[in-house]
Every structure is written in structure tokens, then in C-alpha cells.
Image 1: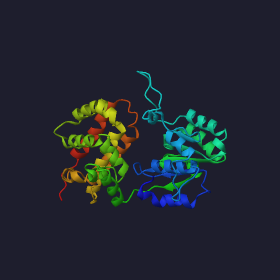
Image 2 (image 1 turned 135 degrees about the horizontal axis):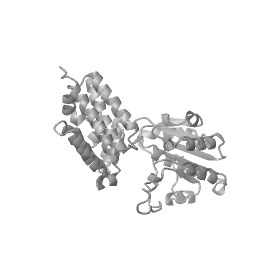
Image 3 (image 1 turned 45 degrees about the vertical axis):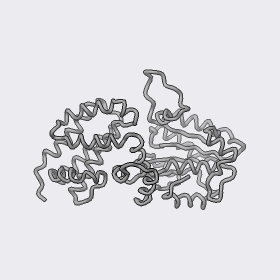
Image 4 (image 1 turned 180 degrees about the vertical axis):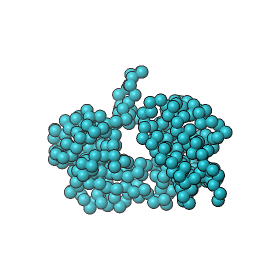
Length: 351
């Protein structure tokens, strides 16, 4: 089933029944439920007897196959690293290469091969690509060829949190459905129904995205967030170089590996922290860390507008290479030194 804030988009599905485009780009911020919507739409397309509300019946042969994970006409193309979270993923040999976070060209070729054969009982087929931005140029061009010459009776569902990173030609071959940030009341209500602890703070930290907030609470992210705040508050009492060493060890710890806490996540969190500093210096609100207003207010008082904006731009540059830093320790040292220097370089601001 879909979420309440997706009711308008689901109505669009019903209005397009029988005449859906061959490719949909479901685009919007992460953590709002795009994947849940895509799965519900795929279930409807494959179901033999959808209900009056448009959802799959859940009882026909096609639904039972889909629920068991064995429907021959539901094709998923996802990075190998995401596959590892599923129980049907092949075991990796000890000491083997880390699973790829990219969708590789062989996967698109396999998809093409699968689509050359007829669908089960001549019915509808659905191909989910999630996320399409996890493709390099060659892989993207291979997918583009499939979209340009679509096979009959196939629906492509591309689930993207960064649609601007896709080739313009891929975007032009898809009908884009925008998934905006859920209304605050609906997001808070959903989290309350799940009894998520500290829901307001986690929802703010997640940019108003309820599924991201719930994932933080359920995956140990709340404790990591608390440590992150405490560590930043320890500067300059603790030197940036010392903190960089502690963060390097943190990222290698069993807890971090178990919860998926990695370098890109850490840098994204620092970017949010600095974004709140910039907002305060420009007279705006604290968006991501409202409970830490006093700490941020004190830090913002030490920053000029130029220093705040410069620090944010530098963290943004760091985020672009956070996935594969050449040396993790040096990367963290450089990032934290830049942050600390921004605070130290600005004279006290009188308010």
C-alpha cells in the first residue's frame, strides 16, 4: 500500500489506467516513499484482478508469484551492494572485493536479453531501475537504447533521488512524476503511528522525509547523530586532527559497518550542520538541528556571512569525492581543518 501523502499521485495512476507511458521517472528527495509507490504500481501492472482502489488483489497467481519474489515479469536492476541486503544474494567469498554501488553495463545487457523473450502468458512486464543515477556514461547509454526502442508491453520505472544527474536524453524518454516532500503533519502522523522515538528531531534532521527519519531510528542512526553533534561541539577544545583520527576509527567500527554509516553519510551530516550555520547568519531558521539552536547560534556569532558561505561551499566540494577518498584520514583532516579555520578566521560578530 502507498502512503497517505501519495494519494494524489496514485489517483494519477488510476486516471492513466490502460494508457501508461512506457517509462516513468519517479523523482524526488530520498526518504519519501518512492520505492514503495513503485512496488505498488508494479504490483498493479502485474496483477490479474486489481481492486476498485487500483491496488493489486494480493491473491491471484501473479500476485502470489510476486510476493514470493519469483514473478518472471518483474525485473529489478539495482547495485550489487543493495542486493547483498537481500537473503537471495549470493555469498561473497571472504576477502573478496566489496560489492559495487554502481549499476554496471552487464546488468543492462542482461535486462535487454530478458526483454527479448515474450512475457509470461503474453502479459505486462515491469522493469525497475533503482537508482538510475548509479550508472556511468556507458551503462546509461545502454539503458537509453532500451528506452528509445521500447519492447512492447513493458513499463520501465526509474526511481531517482537525483534526476539532474541523469542524461538529459534519458529524462526526455521518460514521463517524470515528481514526488515532493510530504506535508509536515502527515509525516509526523506517520512517525507517531510507528512510535519512533525523538521523532521531531529526526524528522527535522532528515529534511522532513519520514522514511529517512524512521530508518535512522531503527538502524542506530540516532546514536550516531548524537555522537556527531557531541564531537562537533568538542571543537576547538579537541583539535581537528584528533577528531579526524577518531572519526576514521568510527567509520571502520563494527557498529558503523553494521548500520551502513559511511564517509558520504558523515560528510552529508556536516553539510547539514554548516547549512544551519549559513541560515542563521542570513537571518533564517535552523532547519536540520533545531534542538541544537543554542550551540549553532553561538558558532554563527563567530562567522561572517562570507566565511559561512565559503565553508558550506568547501564542504559541498568535499561531498563530491566522499565516496572514494584517496586517503580517508587526510580527507577527514582537510575537511575538519577547513571547518575549524572558517570559525577561527572570522572576528566575533556583534548582534
